[in-house]
Length: 231
Image (cartoon, rainbow, N blue to C red; front, side, top):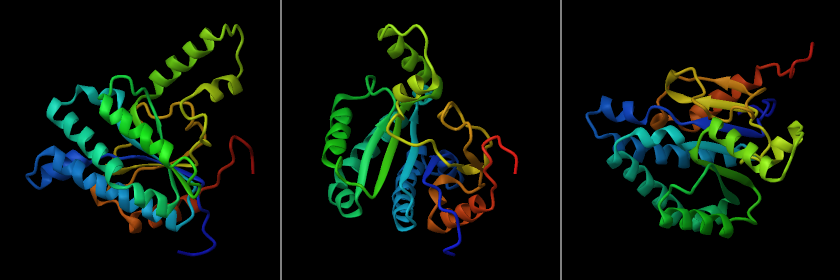
């Protein structure tokens, strides 16, 4: 990759296309999610390689509860395995694992595993890997305003809101990549993406890899981010 390329500080991924990837191959949907985890691992490796400091994955949305129980259970099992199987990997790569979203509806053992992983990786400082779990932008906004109401706030500014969001520990994403060619945000980081660059490659998420990431970064490098100003 050219040294002249602009590397985004924070990339957020909407991992779309697992089900379609499996359907095209006559496989169950969970086979697509299994390959999707492999794609996530490859992408995290590539982000570490190219010096990206923050990477966020939309792993399970508040709307995903509408799916079949078998598929949901399969997704939860894959997340468990990913967290349980990779402590040495997180340490060797300097990966700090975080989450955003409301974990209360999640199975207790999965929540415990996530919290354990967050604690064990808290001092890692090369890259912050955030999993959006039972996350929805609208739900986050509602929960945020309830936090502020509980603090007896009568007047709030954006700094009050921002510091109370799930993402308070993250800079806003510079770049959002949604795979599969769908061109929508699907209730993801509704406030935080106000000035993010958007990219919608047609590749299905299980086929996303380092080559696709480099292509995306090259496209990002050609964007002129003015944040509402005139140049």
